Length: 464
Image (cartoon, rainbow, N blue to C red; front, top):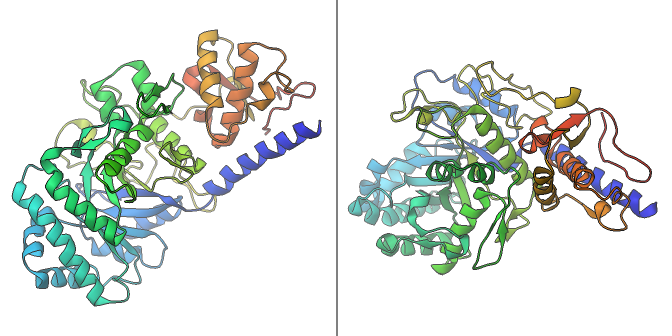
């Protein structure tokens, strides 16, 4: 009984940790603020919204004086951007770099916290060789100007944002390698990032991976939902989600290039709520599943298999839909919030100490707890044994989930059935992940209940 009490206390501690983490801003969760729209709220309204969430970082694609002033003194840090068209002049003339910094950074610091200046966006993948060649000199000139400016600017990092297209190989993750045709510029840039302790910024999108392989098992892998996992034949690591696999492919590529010490920052990742007829998976429910499960994954502190124990700094794409973006419908539909400040869906980002924006009727369907709602997650009556076995294996593999009680000799080993063991494991994961209704989905093979399923010495964590 004493051992079981310790297990219960440990599980409660994990749940408490998740609750506390969800109540305040988290240093690893950021958001992209795109402005290709004609209906954005005033900066002050946007900042008020941000302060009601656990978001602690904002990435601008350029320089927006209104947003930068509105964020002053909030503790929310900024990434600001240099337009691709400005790179050649900044590379050619150090004085131009000093003028850019004086106009776009110095007036705002230290009142506004600028952590990174992203010099260009997706330059190495643009196909413009002259622009790619100018990228490093522009970064060097801007950093020199910041160092000369002194306090307020000297600590700013200078990097550039890349898509996954910089990789020639990414599957399996252990084979990650950069394209040889960009290697000359990229190797020099990586040397600069390593020397200045600036991050390598990358845009992994499991959504696009699913687009290229629209099978149900791929969708589950991309959405952090129960799946069989994928074993990397090289590293022997079993991956249970696409985000970790993509980020670790970048980690492998950095190591292969000789710069494994360079930090990775996810500059963009997200999932669209709408799409055209040919855009598989672009739905509000999938967007909610991806982003909310990603946020829970980051909060767990698990990191990735190649970078364990530390969440990767991640900027979600995007704060709002951008109604003027060209291209397919999905391009205009990545927003976490509508521009009327209502949620597109609940991603679990609302701070318990701030006012919450209400989900709109046009967003994701807000799943109500099946079975009347309550404090425990158990197997649903219609779930098949095969589904429950997959759910059991998935839940017990997650960080923070202790399945010791359903091992032989454990308090919950009997009855020794897949259904009973799966119910215990799914509840453990539900409690550890934050007790949101979507944490008890398991592809509809689980249900929430207000009836305590504990029996004898077998104690299920949870309650009302």
